[in-house]
Amino acid sequence: MKTNLIRIAQDIEALSRYNATPGEGLTRFSFTKEDRGAREYIKKEMEKAGLRVYEDGAGTIIGRLEGKNQYAPVIMLGSHFDSVKNGGNFDGNAGVVTALEISRVLKENKMELNHPVEFVAIVEEEGGRFGSGLFGSRAMAGKIPREQLDLLKDEDGVTIAKAMSDFGLDPDNILQAVREPGDIKAFLELHIEQGPVLEHEEKSIGIVQYIVGINQMEVVIEGRADHAGTTPMDMRRDALDAAAGVIYNISGFAGSLKDGTVATVGSITALPGAANIVPGKVKFTIDVRSKDEGSICKVIDFVKSRLEDARREKEVTYTIDSKLKVSPVEMNEEIIKLCYKNCEALGFSRMNMLSGAGHDAMVMSELTRVGLIFVPSKNGRSHCPEEWTDYEDLQRGIELMYHTLLDLGKEI
Image (cartoon, rainbow, N blue to C red; front, side):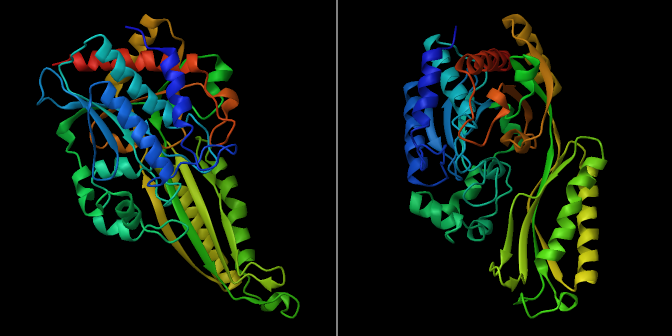
């Protein structure tokens, strides 16, 4: 009951063709023609494996394999198939290919589990188009109210509701994506590491213990736009000067906590954006991550304190808009033990890991017990065209997922 390396490679390479930026990395945003191409490929392969294929209210693709007890809670396995802008071919796709290949192996070997299995390709995990990630899994968890679809927009001003409607999905059906906790026995996800640790330690498998909590926000500081040459320094309300004082201290404070907490300012826009005008408005993002929610709160409180200092000293105003807030998540101990057992049986080297990136698994943990494994990333590169995982490394991860699924599926 061996997975097929050739099919695995063919899946990765086939999905990479549905790309808005060929030659410049993979760009596949949700509800676009590139999404459509990848979606049709995934659905076709699911149908070949004998799955009953449908899309939920958020646009996530689901291929269902019935079990001996069709009323038993399902085991769900998969990942996302959207990408960041100019990303790589393995982020998310590796987990979708895992689902496709395991479904084929089950069919080829006429395996019937006690529990139904749902193989999933989840929509809009990255948030690359609409700026709010983990969309498909949050919809399953009941965290996407209908009104939110009219508020979140892409850079062209198109709302998620409009994009879904133009794509052939009904945004009014978003609540049909909601799953009840008792309906799902477990959620399994394979992902590339997106970092250098496995390769450096020469390990085949990373068994994730925790996924860090994430708090993403956008800060807007408003001062006053003035002439750059005629306005004295002590009479300015320079929004960029105020922002710089806040931003300069964020990373240092996060590092001072000495518990792995990280903070990143990844985007800054100064307006009106001319060389000879004092900036009157600045927007910037902050991304804070830690396995300790208390540490995340400390960074946020520090930012608010520095913003208050800037307000008083620079005579500016500010607003903070929360974009994403997810608590740290601990993976299920029983599933971790199954992964240990199967790594030993298969002869795969492994190590325990902390995930510094967010994944759909973190949201699904609110509905069910969750397992997440990593396979190595070449030179630790990800979210870039150079992203690469050797197909043999991916196959080892798929083999581990397959045997872990069998263990869970045989349980009564």
